[in-house]
Length: 363
Length: 167
Image (tube, chains in turn yellow, purple):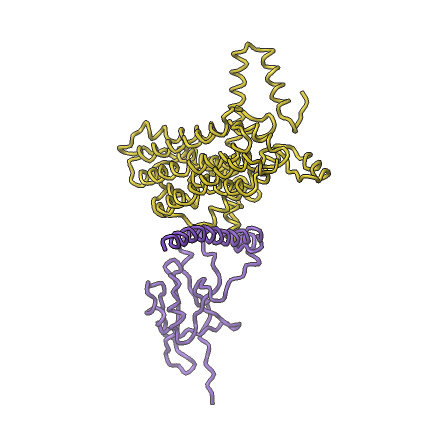
């Protein structure tokens, strides 16, 4: 079994054939599911820890501070220490809370992020499930998380939680439209919803460059709307520390709170990964038409590095938003969506359909 | 005329979007500028930089009574600092001893300062008629025994500095 970092499907198919040769089809599938589950779980945990650390460092430097730097070199073990603290904390039972829903809510939020991560193509052949409706699936599944938030707010028996959850509901229902429509623009260009095919359609140039102005507009709209959908600042009305204590997770403690916290960061990564896959060419290297030598050097960088580089850049941009802009009021939030993003997006989609019809884009 | 009004509304709509984007970018420029210049970081890495730590002269660390090389201080034991202290952090104990002429004179025995009760308001330093008190820049006050926070400010064996009488 040779390791080919440029095409991960060699590894995955080798594991697949060796399992199928040694086990009955049922057990082979079961083993594969368990393996994929373990890999995703590990990735999830490491990613969560890293993103929390990265966020704290980025926000610190933007505010002229140092950030965590005591636990381990440059503070890299800070989030692990925090995790241990959260795990050992008491889970407080809330009087008059709906206990079943209260306990189920964090799992719904986490499971929604899990399901979304499964469909993301990290590199060639490194994708848990390759749906032919990948874009639709990710939009659908990532909006499931709001169900968990609503349940958390409802079952907590706390006014802060309920207000936070209601805000989150209004927010996600509104911004879902913009996220869908802005992703639709690239679906029109590439003619498919399958994420792997969308990535392959960008081998000769990313849609952001090939689709020029209309895709740039929908990229910006996607960034704004998806930041809102992940309940991150400046759209963090669902949490709104200064008004609602902690919003929908006010009453949660210990590891249950950690689930919400983790899900928020993984959501941020999923949004960044979707932006990367759909607009920035996924794991495809950066090519400039005509510069053969330059393109050749770019090909040497493995796809997985490209993917995480681009996703990291998008994560940074989303963090940049959070630590620059002040929080919107709820009426401003809805005005932005219904009066600005949605009309622009609808006209933009129409425009894109026209452009594709006329072939006025770089092929 | 209705057409003109509508044109104006549409123009304002796009103007608002444009201005909004510009102002957002301005904000991102500021934070981005800080991000790429980590040299601007103001955080002090305190225990590591203890040797090079610079503390402003105005910093109110703790009240001290400066003594000169011959162990003279300027405190006459008048008790004005004790009266002015809002939370009773200062206790003045005086004694009467004969001076060189043989007359009994009131002088300071112990200037007791309770650091644990001090709010660092600075009234004692301000109101001292002899300028006998001042603030030091010492700030590491943590101790394991509470009694160590009660300090006697005049050193043992010290005495009031004689004023030079101008002739």
